[in-house]
Length: 284
Image (cartoon, rainbow, N blue to C red):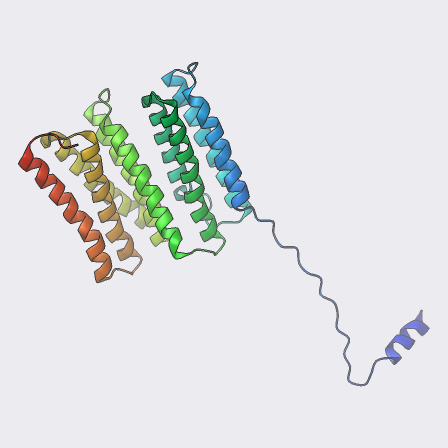
């Protein structure tokens, strides 16, 4: 054996170095869009059964709670497997849960099965889009379009829930205003967590935004003779304008163009309120 070693060393040229082979390290297995698409598809498949004639509204809400838990656990596993920073933070799971609740409410109100199916398909698309943004950000693949997807999914879920809460005649006003506050609080917290890593600052900003929107809801429900969809649009625009300016202020990216963009939504809200006060009759 020593002779073999001596013969192998003798074949090396002067000044030549022996390069040791470096074994490639095993890369962590990452789950991505396929797993997320499968999770969204399963959510749609389960949600389609909520319209069954064998289920009462109480059973539909129980099934909705179970679906929200299953989807949340699936997303927790996804983020934990991909080592998403702060994957236990609440902002990763707010939009999917709100979308599931909105879709279940539409399934109870919509008598047509086609409307129910459309609501469930939209739910699956929103679960995929909102979670895809968080997944890409955790893997360091964030793109400018992702911010639009985050804002669009959050805004649409907020608008749908505002409409559903306001048009429910069985709920007292105290419950309606409390629900609006919670919805605005959770949606704002998700937006503000993208702008700052300080959880306390994000929660405080979301609390101020939700308080402002709830105060506006109280004034419009009390003094405006308008339909629920009209008030829901104004509240959603007011939330969007307030949280947009705050997000860019926290992100240190507030410019004149951004102020004009979100200020335009605030002007639209004022115009809609003034129009309702002048006409004095329901619009839309």
